[in-house]
Image (cartoon, rainbow over all chains, first blue to last red; front, side):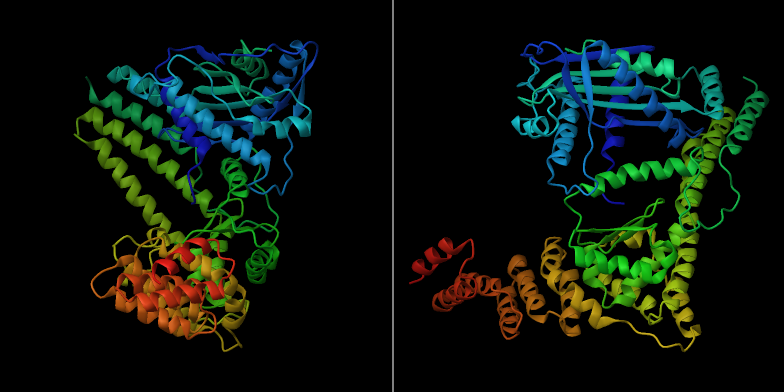
Length: 241
Length: 386
């Protein structure tokens, strides 16, 4: 098969970061050094299709994607997003790329650019390894997608763009038994399922990433509407809107 | 620590695990069929749909409508009923490769298109890939992976409990070897179903074995042992080639064709780019073997000879200058020599100290490509050589 699945790769990066975090639910966010004042009244937020996938961890430790859980998780997160945005007096505008959009189409380019910049933020701002801390980004947060994002602003008349990413996995019964037996006999904890996510808010005028947050949880469950709402709230907590 | 309870625990896990993935044989996918949302198969489809989204926005995809219509036409010709279920993506990549996702995402590399001699050879590979789709091979393979890695981790655990050193490594090794063997069975199946469709569509049955012969010869001529990607997962074993040859012999005497002219006319305008990509692999001996074969076949001889000369110019071994000039000279004698042949000839002549010949070749380059984007540089060289 051609190329790597970038989503999967990002999942690995997030998972490795997550191992450095303690149990339960944790978030860690960054805010841009210069956040322009929020316009008065209602704001328009362009929501790029949330990248969400739920999977099942087999006894052998492989994550198998689950379509029905994913569908439920997506709809739960989307419902939660609508609620949260309403509270912030922000109107969600949905991202709808043309079906036959060529690679050079601005939507595709902006998606890819955000994916690349987001990966860099994860690598260089979230790593526990000081070797990966960039000297030029050490004490600041000034990542940007550049002013080309204004193309999205013009098409959708939106002030901001919001990117949401979630991966949630659950151990099968057999995996849980395996975790218990190995844990009891050897004292070594082998991984079961967990939830990771990140979100970012982009200013569609400057292209600056105004805010970026990573979430890790061992208790979350996007299949459940209440738990998904909680996870989405945790993820968007501190959103500067 | 007592051994008995741990083995019991391991067996209990295995019992739960073995209930997870069905080992029952699956039926062929029907035209238009989609997996049930709750099934494991739907998960594999979903993962591939995400991959396909990336593919759709990839700059590696060749989007020429005519070429895409042609390859899709071959797919539909092989199995009209599945025509709507399979989406072909032509991938700009010099390797000989094709692949099929569980949801009907078919990838065909341009390196395969460059190497196929005729439509029949392309159709055989496409039919083989469609065989994987129809037989739902991703599903059975992933279920097999799941069962074997489950069992390996449980047996690894059991072994660790009773004190067999390295048992974890041994059991996962066994699982992987067994998973690969499963792959070869699927290749046989895909060959059988692909061949059937290919034969029914009226393609020359001898072309299936022929493409493997061509590839084996090219791989043997290559500079490094790494086989083309398709070889790794689809080994062209003697057994396999013999099976295809036998199938060809058994095939009825119904009229058949390889559709060489139609194929070569379709790819003609793309060959230059595909040859350029092939040259970039710097597998010079493999490319030399391939270009010789293409020159002999007689399609696009001028451009192929130009690229043959480029092999020698870039490799720059002892005696390569002469070989390059020889290839360029042969290219120039053909009607379809690209203007670039004069520019390359000029550089080689210059490096040999033949300044007058170099200058003349630069001038001819500009004569054939008056609006070349390196015109100013070439004019500068002409002045230098005056």
